[in-house]
Amino acid sequence: MPPLIDMEKCSGCGTCDAHCPLDVIHFDSEKGKPEVKYPDECWHCGSCRLDCPEEAITIRFGPEMLCL
Amino acid sequence: MSQDVRQFGEVLETDVLIVGGGLAGSNAAIGAAETGARVLIADKSAIERCGDTAGGVDHFMAYLGSGEPWDTREGYLEYVARIARGAVNLDVQNAVFCRGLNAAIERMDRIGCTLKQQDGKFYRTASLGQPGPYFINFNGKQLKPALAAEARRLGSRFLEKCAIAGLLTDDGGVAGAVGFHIRTGAFYIVKAKATILATGNTNRIFDNPTGLPFNTWLCPANTGAAQSMAFEAGATLANMEFVRITVVPRGFSAAGLNALTGMGGKIVNVSGEDFMPRYHPAGGRAPRSKLVEGVMREIQDGRGPVYVDCRHLSPSELGHLKKTLGYDKDTLPDFIEQKGIDLGKDLLELMPSEGMQGGPSEVCSSGIMIDEKAASTVFGLFAAGDCADQMRCVHICTTGGYLAGIKAAEYALDLRRTPVVSASQVGELKEKTFSPLRASGSIPYRMLEDAMRKMLWQNAGPARNEKSLAVALGKLEKLGEHYSNVSASNYHEMMRVLETGQILQVAKMMCTASLARKETRFGVYHNRVDYPQTQQEFEGQITIRKSSTGFQTAFKKLRYDAVPRP
Image (cartoon, rainbow over all chains, first blue to last red; front, side, top):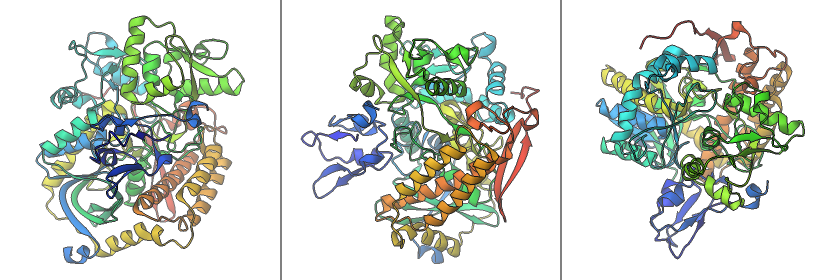
């Protein structure tokens, strides 16, 4: 499952959008917040969480991987 | 000339264009910039986080001259000749790795991502058929950002969120490339005196056992861009027949096997039997292809599930393991925790990974055939990293990427002529690149890829024969006919459709090269059921290139009787 972004902590810097190797996260400039636009294309590499300056991102795995 | 081309998009000019800003590409940028060339790196992501090592890496293979026979250049090359016999070229390995090793260790220190532990020493582990602990275990979580910072500091320009779609050629060789921005659709025409392709191996090509195509061991954005583009430009490729498979935690195709078995974890079946000695004398430290075979067999024969057992590790070993397991795959500790597993108390279930098209060992790959200067058979075209047939793994991508940068820069700076960019070539490539937006059909890229993946795993996966490979080629033709109906509704999707086309092209090369290798080599990595023995006459590479009839294969004998001079 895709990364979970805590919008309260998110400062709208756009780093997660810029750094995702798979272009999964798209920053919505109107809302000023990122959106996980292509969750099926998430590689679970952790880059977004690593580089988020606000530590707003958590990685949660879903049953499709945990219960296989 | 420039005038004509400007109508199609933004024209950029550079001495060295690097396609792919991963581990090899960013080392190449450093090498090229240090040599005095203007450098432009294009990547689908940001250079800070892209490619196989985006989230980090934890291992760097090296001989360090400690006094043991295995810990020398000769000892290392002997090991290489043993595990990659028939695919690795020792002269090129010596040139692209051995000669650059000391400089690479120093460079890692200099850019702020040392290979050493805090006490200044190297922590070394052995696995995968090694005669001694070649793997330096280190914290590479910030390696990519450190490399990107160094490339930037040296003046490299970055073209990020840019998918390179094709190479430009003139009478003298490669003249640059075209690409597009994956959000805005802006079209770029890059004029370059030398081009280095560094886009990795080919993933998303075989059926994924988890059913999730992006749940891959190597970066799923690596889809054979270099291999397909270089092929179109007339370059010779090699080692394209091989399938790469590894062993991963069940459910998550994550790197980390190295760390687990290197630290002493045992691979066991459902009865708790450490079964690997039945498959290879080195047991759990056997070459990867044997580990895969063992795990597959145990599961197939009903002795699964298969697990890695770390319960016997000492508290300090477990501590080191838990601390470092997230270096190679940042989210693996989260996965293990969310599964409710404590490695000191519980078994962790394993599975064979998805198949990939890639090199059959840790010391060589599949892709563009390179010489000792990382040059391809086409002037102006170089290759580095996993897409170069003689580079693979962190250690060689680091040294070899750097070398490719130097050699490409020297070539560019010596070049007496200016490459010519043809308006008609650019126009054609642009038309082809944007055609999915105008496709009359509406097949999503995923549907075509899913069909291709399942078909290839059955016919060209871990067991192959002449007929199954011919069937695969026939079906790939048919899939190709449907490709023009694959549609995209935005530029991100257009990138995916481009990737699908690259994977299709690599698949055709893989099947064609597999037909030419009438033997079995490296176990399941090229298993010809109709030619089950490994034959001396095939101790060399199958090469492949474009011809008027499609594909032309040839055989290149390799020598292993003498160790290359330093």
